[in-house]
Image (cartoon, rainbow over the protein chains, first blue to last red):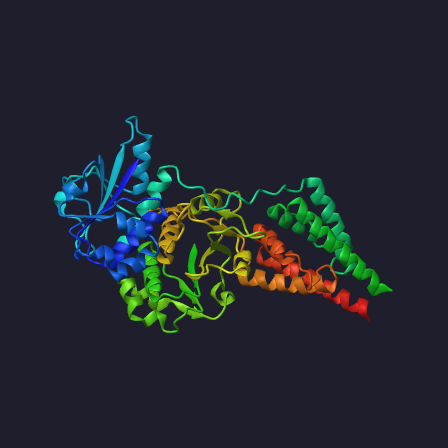
Length: 246
Length: 246
């Protein structure tokens, strides 16, 4: 799936750098700028600083004069707009729209462009009208002022997940085997003797202590290794209590 | 649901402003900074510029010296870490973890803190060990360098959606009061002394015992009453050990 990010009349160089970084971190690299405020925006210091290593995205980026040139070869166009337009495309939340794209009977598009307007004025109506959808990121009703690079970050993230995502960095940590009920009961019986020995549990007035601890450990669902550790604690408690009585 | 964002040793003022804006746009306002590089970071020009109107978030933000202070009153702790730690909490993608939180049989937590490490070094192991989960935002294998404010934006967005978005009203769930992070840390510290006293824990060769127990109790999510019981056990162990040395 070809994916392009198009920034229209962007005024802050720092944002262009932030956008490059946001794209790269989600595995995208096709950036086109339409009439940016600064002709040299791809080489400005703030841009490079905020790009923080996404230099290849900047190096490959193109600057063009018209939206037409920017959209060359792209089939599915997504505006990003906070306010719905009369006569415009349907307004949808990104996740909802991407679900639709891949869930529909129609085959999904072969290429997608995401369009972002200027920081101050957003997208022009004429540009929104060309698009298949206006993506609206859900934001607080009282404060919808999303930074441009932050908006690109959210769209790039949702789009990457819609495309199947990356492996989370985790995975490596294998689930450890949980102790079974018998092992847990054995540990609790051991612990009960230890609690009596250190005089915390009075067998004449047990006050539901063991059922409470049982619930606590049930919720924790200890691994076999953890049950082993807990039995070690009980053993040490019993030995210490023994020494205290000598 | 109380939600707090905690930034640990943040070095760039611009990022603090970007974080405030990212939070506010998703309807969150509780920001705590632990040892930021600049003492006056909340009033610096870059901060205010990047906050772009989220001044109330900055005005309400607190600066503290320790992570303990930052986590006061919070029960469920989410680290954000790119690399899984041995003995650390499970690493999960944000969406996956939030689904688990609300999908489980247990009631969801009453308060959640999201922890973000410094731009250069991320989070310290000790800080990650305290957490219930390490959230890992899926990123390109070759370039995982997510900007701090962008990471906050993504987490705030996913968390807002998990909470039901802006329209949906939060369902009231009767909950047992869970011990907060401070109470849990205090109990673990008490227990550690008791384990040393009964000669189960060798301070010279701790073998990650305390991080393991921390994870076990995180999974159990003890109530305040249970923490009280566990401290009683620790106290009895210490007293017994004292008697054994007389």
